[in-house]
Image (cartoon, rainbow, N blue to C red; front, side, top):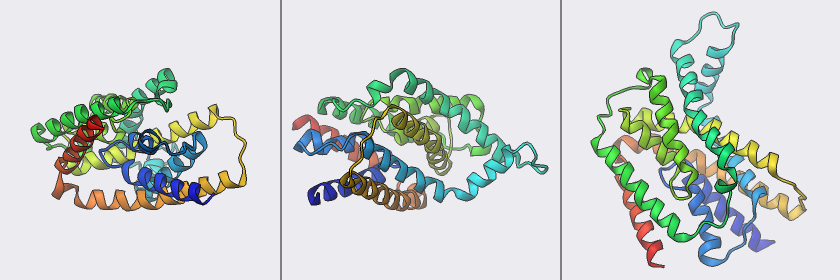
Length: 264
């Protein structure tokens, strides 16, 4: 149980740190089992760490989410047009990954992805992120985001079906390509994670058949608390420093990681 606890804590920290950075959380969560033969806790643990990161992003953006909810309530008299349009754009941007998830959920949940495919996904999508960051105008704000642009961001996010692609990284890539400034790009990608993670949780819960022991409950609690705590710190830090550091450090990390994995 002790070894399970520390492994669960490690995986929770990985999930919380990588879910919202433009690196792949799913790929990092596979590393312990692929590289070292560590135990795979399976779907129950996946549910707990995803619930933790979902709780963190909801708590961080609680004011914005309350504004979105008020703007969409039919009895609201003084509707905030900007919040209403943001909510509409988030719905449209979520549609592609919902469609892909329904069609290819078995592929997305597969634990058999090999290291080479993760490595190449890191290299390819890191190059795409770098190209988008360096060539994009980054002049638009969220208020200028159109439904077509939101759909395009959603299509990029849907490419995260490939382990190693990074959901956050693909959403940021798409937003940069359509010209959003980097601060609003990151904010939109994080808000977009809410329906995306929620949808993934619904799929996991619906497909699971669970028999939970006391040790499983301890692992789940560790996963939830650890991922939520680290995810909140990651979101806060990333939004504070992203305008200063840009995307280059994350691109370099993903390239180095991809090369290292190919050499293993």
